[in-house]
Image 1 (tube, rainbow, N blue to C red):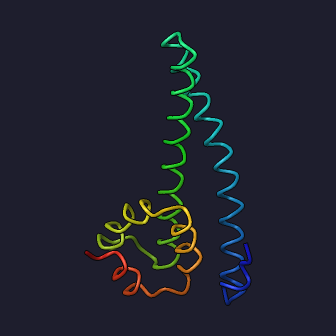
Image 2 (image 1 turned 90 degrees about the vertical axis):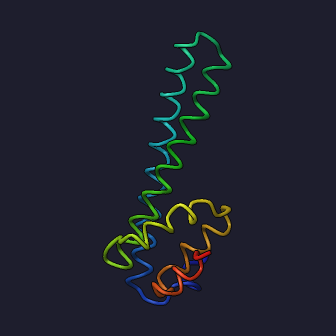
Length: 122
């Protein structure tokens, strides 16, 4: 991913790089916790398929939680607070496909609050 082509200021580039590193570390930890939860769920059910389902669900929950945390922190860093309008668009952002989600995160530093809110209004 070419961050320099999308982000203009050195401060924004540094923020994206720090968030990327933090996200990758969190993702690894989340996957590990998901696997641990899944294994515990599988052992409780006493079946391999239950353990596999538990691991998958644990990883899904971890990724959903991380994605939400990342979006909340980016909005907070960009706009200084999470009021009801910004909070209301978090779930629609999370519902974006992975390519749309990634593109939005890269564009976030260049979007005004009004443009971002307009994108997710009905």
